[in-house]
Length: 77
Image 1 (tube, one colour):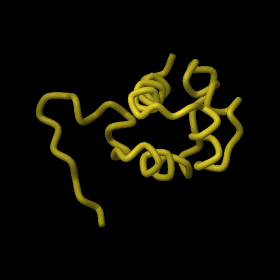
Image 2 (cartoon, rainbow, N blue to C red):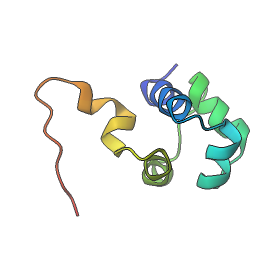
Image 3 (cartoon, one colour):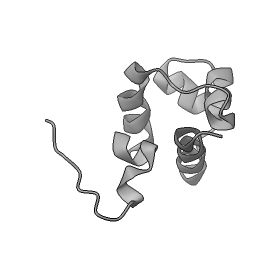
Image 4 (cartoon, rainbow, N blue to C red):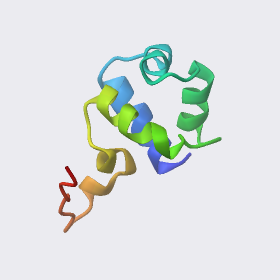
């Protein structure tokens, strides 16, 4: 399983969202979400920010970067 898939699954479950609910909010199929979470594929780069917004986290969190020592988020806005 990919790190991003593991993180999506973990955060989605913490927020008590189903794969269907996440899929509908992001505009993909539940099967696509399942494939991400199993590591069979990864979300398209254009979906990373929408996924992060739905899960109320940063894109860095999806990649697991905020958990690493010495990481300093960069504000690109």
